[in-house]
Amino acid sequence: MGKTIIAGPCSVESREQLREATEALCKIPQVSLIRCGVWKPRTRPGGFEGLGEPALRWMQELADTYHVQYCCEVARPEHVGLCLQHGVRTIWLGARTTTNPFMVGEICEVLKGSGMDVLVKNPVCPDVSLWLGAVERLRQAGISHITAVHRGFSMYHNNGYRNAPVWEVAMEFRREMPDIPILCDPSHIGGRADLLAPLSSTAMQMDYNGLMIEVHPHPADAWTDAVQQITPDEFKLLLEETLHTPVAPDSEAIPQLTALRENIDTIDHSLLGMLSQRMELSRQIASIKHERHMPVYQSGRWADVVRDRLQLAESMGLDPTFTKEMLEKIHAESVRIQLES
Ligand code: PEP
Ligand code: MN
Image (tube, rainbow, N blue to C red):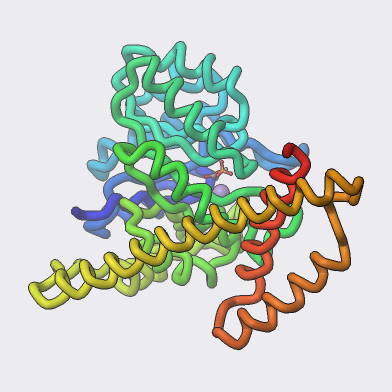
């Protein structure tokens, strides 16, 4: 399946800036839609909040001239009507809007019967239910063309990203809604031009349906998100490096994959069997402790377990952070069982 590629400036700044961006992007065959911000939700007050209607008028005019289609964010119900009046057929709910079920509901009311395509960015916080909820509300409003956009999450520690990717939240979204295509927005995840290529490659490895990337004719002069935008030429290179035609699995790879997956299935089954035995031992320990009024949590024992298992894991080539998190999950469950038995 071909990938959906959406590209364009973070914000519309002038007719000339949008024209220049459009002229360059309409020559890139992979680009199916041009993104541009008309209303900009700013986290802190005082920044550029978008040009509103004048931007929509330029979009309408340039869409005719260059035979392209634009999409933009809507943050209020009235924005939807303005988009429709100016020929914009695809809109997106921004991360701050997806976080707010009341606003999603109000926007859904005006979307009813509009036939618009809607992109739903993930909510600001890593809460998969809010993301799923926004899609469910759109579906209830009769919107049938819905696409999810993974733009990362605001965390206290973002590990060098503007918005931490937390890929597992997107994986959970996809598990719950396998029919909804998903795009990756590496611009808002990375927040830096040099992170676009590695993030886009990861998204392709994760089998995303496409990318939404901020492209500006003169990134250094951009009024918003200057450090994460790239030029149309840089964008062309990025696509060349990132989009590879997949090779269909050959007759040798398929049986190899099947055999390896069967081994994984067997190991997962034994892991679950062993976890179940481990929890049974916890129940027996609980009854000894309860009879003698011994506390369930024994910090010395837990410290010994962590030390021993981390040493063993290291000798087996397992990642220490992964090992520690897995042990903590198992221990928390063991404590819960002992408290409740
Ligand atoms: C944007 O796409 O320019 C934007 C503001 O996105 P988000 O809602 O992901 O922050
Ligand atoms: Mn932006």
